[in-house]
Length: 81
Image (cartoon, rainbow, N blue to C red; front, side, top):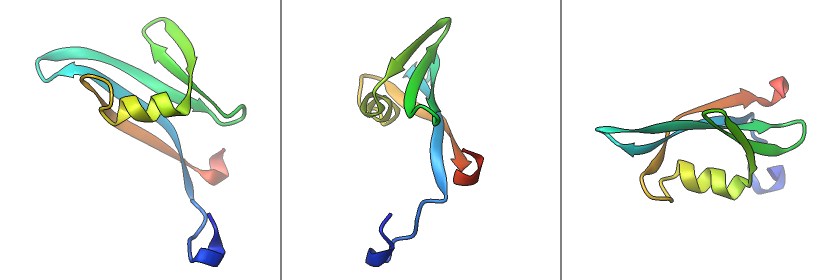
């Protein structure tokens, strides 16, 4: 972030998001995990692992596709990355 604008640098980076697709009566979970070394997001859905765009990650985690919404998130300290 730009300290000249009075903003501090971020101390944490988003690392993983578990997403629930469904309703309170049932559904399916999958997880997005960021590979910070290569700056890529991967979707872990049962035995299938695919690379995805960050925009897709944020859309699905924010309830932007049908009945999907974030269930939990993990942040890492920038010193851990």
